[in-house]
Length: 207
Image (tube, rainbow, N blue to C red; front, side):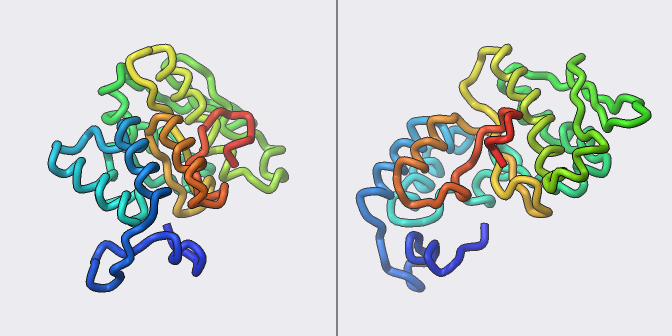
């Protein structure tokens, strides 16, 4: 995520020689919560401790280099809106297997709507009228992920759910994380609302 000037004052770079600031109690409380709710569970014990320490001392916690392909994934809203949902979900599928969800995805032939079938659930990604809504890329990101969250809930093996950041943008991000971790980020007071991962629930609240 690209930081503005205000955000840069809330976080430090990872090189302590560049920025010796060490965070405050908000960062420490948040880091402990993120660890407790499993943000770094895919890491070894040593790397998990390192990630928590970095977040506690002021580093931005959603480090793509640490979370990529396990927790954090790119989701280009434009590509999704233009027929890329099936391809994206196939890229997400290996991470979901750990939580009891084996994805079966196919694009459904439909004269008007862009529709995919996700484990037998028919998901209308976009309708022609959605192009006039002002947020077709966001809709095409959230709607399929809302179905993924239904499947995660039904599997019952994990509290993790799909969340989004920069929803619908060309550099959109999807995170598989415990909703309580996202709430810990919100409760820290370190982030404006648009920088907190939003649950993909299909209601429109996540974009």
